[in-house]
Structure formats: structure tokens, C-alpha cells
Length: 535
Image 1 (cartoon, one colour):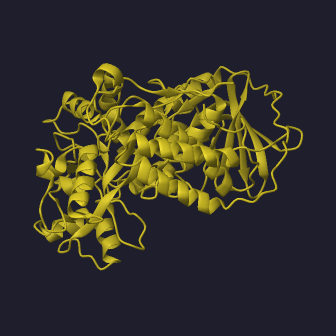
Image 2 (spheres, helix red, strand yellow):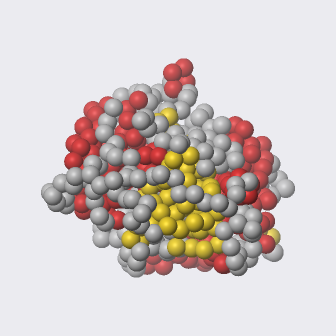
Image 3 (cartoon, helix red, strand yellow):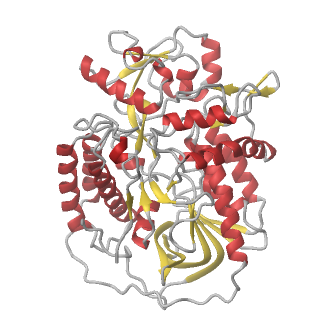
């Protein structure tokens, strides 16, 4: 088995660092984390810890919207069927049913808390995205749903007197004693290391898109939650399933901005360098095929035309409607001289959403007592091998609510006589050699993009495993002293799990495309791959 370093990233001793006590600790302040906080009994003290500001999360940058059955002509059965079809026969049908049926309630809840969704003729404006059979995407500010939803939820959270927030605080590791999670070891520039003791802990740290060179994710998405849960002994699964969004703005010198799937839902075409509308060459659903199909088709067309990208075209649509529906994207593209109502938008796939993560049940319980989880850091069974568009914010809302309620119930049962267990991680010998952390990180991101990207094969995956093992050998056992260093250690650990899972799954399913095993193999692989650290 490959190397995963020490149990804790840094040394600490309970008598030499400050302590903080809370009833419920929430790690991560995206939609799932704040929704969990809103579900906790007001009699309990809650601490929300975020790596940067509350606004820095994948939730904040979500463009498309929230999927839910809000139209009388739509049904729960339709939404369930669409989710199962997109998931490559690997979804948990009971979980899908559970989440889909809660969607209208969670959307109405947001409206009651002040979220201003787009309206048409006084009714919710419902969009359609790839893989959906009906118009059911609730959106806000045209193409900035995440920003509006997070604004409303943050304002709601600020009204709660029992919820505190520590920003710019990095969670180094979960604290465990006798197999039970007791809180977390955290660090910030002001206080250094702090032991935060909690009756219950909820993990909502988001995704891992920063493991890839091309990604829509913000800088904070380095897989920290996946790594700290694994080091603590929690089960992880589905780590081979990273979703690549088909349409990411591809301009040299620009950040890789997401171009929402809702554009294709509104009628945008995908064309290659010659202007050929190619999606119907690959799938009868054209531009509205699920994300895995569109991403793989784009890569094939790029190879066929020997061009680094394809293009989105909206020039055939009403320009006023386009500008009104996509004001954020219009402004972003305009910075590069692109008028989205007239000009072609250069796009290509990029790492977008991590389906794999910490195994949880329908209440958000992990396999470790005292630890709950919600949002992108989890593997719930909702997405299977490929997430249906706009099911992610929905999942965060549903599982955030349940994890918060469950953690609240358990914390209320525990007496207030906090006792510090004998947790100690004494210093070990530290290597004096210096590391070029930025160079290793950039090399890892490039390796993951080329070898564990949209297309994979045994040769590339084996090479990636050997290379990452070498990096792990001289990085994971070091006692690094910066956030950049700790992020790199987490990224290496998560990347190695992803590579191992991708090597094991010898078939093509959903977002996992093996060129050397191009077919679905239900007989051997209609199952999930799980990992749990031993010892």
C-alpha cells in the first residue's frame, strides 16, 4: 500500500496550545455548512470555521441554479429518472428519491429567508440544463445563483446569536480519541495552533478541483476535508469520479471561468474551429446530453480538428434575452473583447465537481462516531458516476439540513462537562531540506490533468501513481509550517486515492473513461470502491 504519512500533519501537545470549546463544530462555510448551522438547536453553541472568507466556496460561484420539481407539468418521478440516467447506474435510488422529494421544500425555505430567484410573469423562472427532461432549474441574477443564495443564507446565519465564525482559519486535522471524533486542530496567523473541542463535528469543506491544472474551482478547493477525514479513519468512496464541466472559458492569461450549462439549455450551439455543430455526431441529445458525454465529445472533436478548444455560439439567439439571462458571463467575456451575442466563446472541459468523498448515510452520518458531513466533500449516493446538472446545491441544502439536525440531537444528549482526552502528537525529527512547494503543486496539477483527466488508461495511471508515490515519499512525512505546505500534503494524499481508484475500475462509466476498457462492465463493476486508512 502507498505511503500516507503521519496521522497528524503537525506536532502539538495539549499543555502547550490554547483550547476552545463548543457544542458543534462546522468545518466549512459554504451552503452545506451554513445550512447545517441553521438546523442546530439555539441552545447549543456553534462554531463555523472557514479557510478564507465565508464567500470563498464553490457554492458562491455556482451559476446554473438549483434543480427541483416546481412546475405542475413536472413530477418527482421525472427528476428521479433523469438523475439515475445521468449517474451511470451507480446512484442509490433511495437517496435520489429522498433528495428529489425534499427539493421544493428547500427552495421555498430559501425564498422565505430572502433569496431572490428570477421570475417570469410573477412565477419562478425555470431553466433547463443537460440531462433534464423538463424545465426545473431555479436560478437567480441570471447566472449568479450561488452568490444570491449564499447572500441570503449568510444574512440568515448572522441573525443567530449562538453561531460564531472564525475566518482565515485552516483545519489541520480532526481530533480523535478511542475512535471518536472530538473536534479539530486548527491554525490561523493570529493564534497559531488551537485545539477546538466539540461534542459533534460536521465536515463541509467542499471539493478538490484544484488538483487539476484546468478547473472551475476557487483556490480553496484543495481536498482538505477528504484528506483529514481519511487520516482520521473515515471511509471514503467513489474517488475516481471527478466531473469535468464541458464548457470552461479558455483564453490564455485568463482564469478558467465557468460557462454555465444553462447557456446550452437556452439554445447555445457547440461548434468546432470550422463552425461544424458536432454534438449530434456523438449523441442524439446534442448539446443537452449529460456532462460526461459532452466533455468526452468535446475532447474527441478537439483531437479530430487538432485545435485546443471548441466554441459556444449564441449569435442565433435574441441578444437582449442573452444579455439579460447571462449578465455575469457577458461581463466576463467582454473583458477579453468577446461579445457573447455575436462572437464565438472559446471553451474546453475543466475539473468541476468531485462526486467522491466521505461516505455518509441519509442523515449525514459518516463511519466515524462524532463526525457528520455534507456537501461536495461527501459521497452520498445521489450522483453515482456523473452528477446531473444543478443537483449539487440541492444536495448541500438537503444534507446540510439533516447533518445539522442530527448533530444537534446528539450534542444535546452530551453533558457540558468537557474533558480533554489524552491526545498528543509529539514532535518528530524534521528534515532540514527545503521544498519548492509551488513547483510540486504545479507539477501535480499538470500530471492529474494529463493522466487522470477526461480520458485515462493503465499506462498513464500507473505513471501517475509512481510519480505521486515519489512525491509522497519525501513530502508527507515532513513537518511543514505553512498553509501552502499543508494543502500540498492534502492534495498528494487525495490525488493518490483518486489514481488508485481509477486504476482499479477497469471499465468506462460516467465521468471515468478508460480508453483501455471502453465499455460499461456491470457484471464486475456495478459497485463502489471504498478506502479506509488502516492502523
